[in-house]
Figure 1: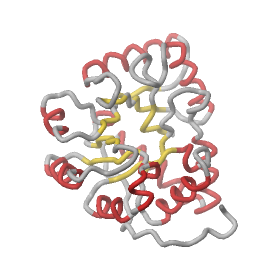
Figure 2: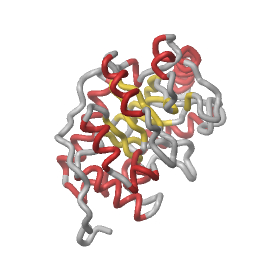
Figure 3: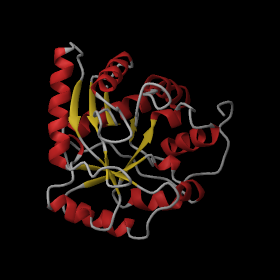
Figure 4: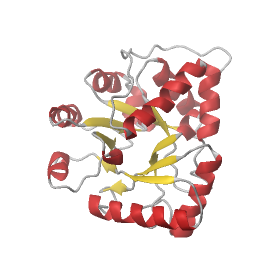
Length: 254
């Protein structure tokens, strides 16, 4: 299993504080059945910039340390890029790290809204051959209130990734239900941990996949796992035609 969004790099942001934390996270990831993790430290936001070159160096260091500790987990370079107007310049200048060196870019929106320039930026990124992946849309307040915003972005070529803890109910029933609705409407394409530690922001992948299996069966689980594999191979992820979210209750689930 591949985890495409994880804050496992030591001392990079609000994730693992040091190498010991990283090793502990790696061991828990393995227990969840994860074999590869894309390290995605925050870019910009209120954290250090974490440019591409620094991330690659830290990934090499962590992989070497995991090998010494006989922890059989592979770390790949990535970044969680907080959306900003000059993002394309950051890509051109070699500051932005794509997910595992692919054409996929993990982009974080503000928690409260979707900036007005998002659609134009995503269009420009796609013209340059990049695929925007929206991180945890199920926790964006504007998208929760107006799912049409996400529908339009997905319809025009973007992808999205929900958080395992959201699907598992760790952020409450409302976000869990919305995560299931996003899956049902083909508005999300990846499940990832967004793990920051092994306590209050853990992996939860196993629990999330059990929830998804209960709601949709094994086909959805297979699709999400395969999409993560396709991403790190630089191949096109599976995507179905998106649908607008229908307001309804899921009988017996929530």
